[in-house]
Length: 73
Image 1 (cartoon, one colour):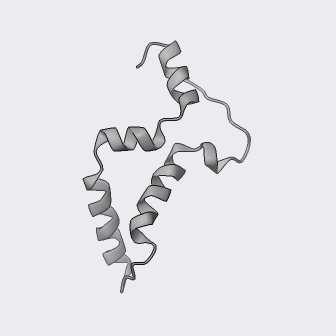
Image 2 (cartoon, rainbow, N blue to C red):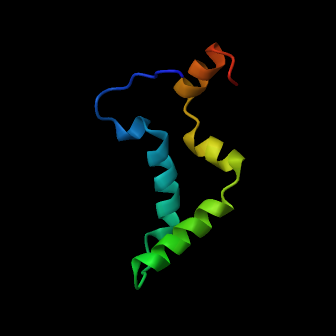
């Protein structure tokens, strides 16, 4: 386990926030009749993401540097 300390509140440094930003680009003008339709669309978008795309969206240099120090990547 590697602890990466961040400021108390900084969503711009949280990799999942960038992934959600990427997904919202496909969802922002869509309308859904119910939550089930939205869940289906999000599932579809997530299943289409390739590992390389996820890495490019969420791969912050400070995280990659920390992982390389401990020889994880």
